[in-house]
Image (cartoon, rainbow, N blue to C red):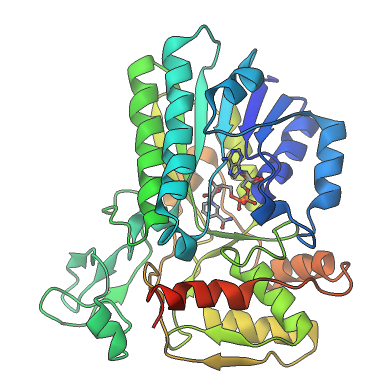
Length: 378
Ligand SMILES: NC(=O)c1ccc[n+]([C@@H]2O[C@H](COP(=O)([O-])OP(=O)(O)OC[C@H]3O[C@@H](n4cnc5c(N)ncnc54)[C@H](O)[C@@H]3O)[C@@H](O)[C@H]2O)c1
């Protein structure tokens, strides 16, 4: 069945790929996006994509913080996919009001609209994040489960990067399932947790089906090549191509679950079109942890040039050590196992990124200085 679908943030990395997919399925798609300069600025690689999007769908240039902009986009929709957000973990620690206004107040406007106006929306899908778990799920030597609340500054300064149990004993990271305790360590994570709760609780009260998709680290063609605040694979790609130096935090062994854009689009489209009722939460990841060091070295291999990097032992406030998804629920309910391997996905990312010659300058160095100046990096 085709649907009227409003995609907020639909001009962004995940949004624009999703929009293409939904249009191919026959859905009638509207996009609400403010074309944030941090994401869409010169050199981002996104300019042509946005021009194509204007041809493909109704693009409402507007801001989720402004209720009248929602009004312009909202008529006749069956499903809302809410992706618009500020997305940088480090930046969220010193742009707290902006992150709260866009991510939390922006979502509150959607719920006000659903509660107070005539509409036919029967389902909301919200982009949540693995950031809401914080450190996620660990076990100790006896097999007891722990959800560490975060790492102290003192421990990080001593190079004790792995989360520890309450009595200081060593823990082992495991895949994090959806029932794990949410315990965000960054302002970004707090806003994503709030956004998710607003949608699940608000929609339940209104009898609207709602799904929160907790994306892991998404990567692939189309991710901004210049936004230094998020998307390490695309930023590191630009840095390696430019021969610029990469600061690898901690000991480089911190790990992430890198999930390819096509798999994320498929999961999101299935959440749009499912008939499953009620309020649901899914991890969207591969279930495979990869260290940051492995990523830097693989990029160098694939690009055919040695990356310039140092493993510095420095750390950022708000960062977590490891997190990867338990994907059993995604598989059981939506029938999907994100299966694109990192090497294959990186090849697609690099084939796209290397079209842009020369590699664009990023504000990577400035973004680190911004953290250092505020003592959010040490
Ligand atoms: N990319 C990832 O690794 C990842 C991981 C977890 C969660 N997410 C979530 O997925 C969603 C999409 O992320 P993405 O990677 O596509 O990011 P993106 O930055 O590429 O896209 C976000 C889009 O939202 C728009 N936007 C920002 N502020 C807005 C505002 N005030 N009003 C209207 N539009 C606004 C931007 O212009 C952009 O087009 C976000 O909610 C993000 O938190 C992404």
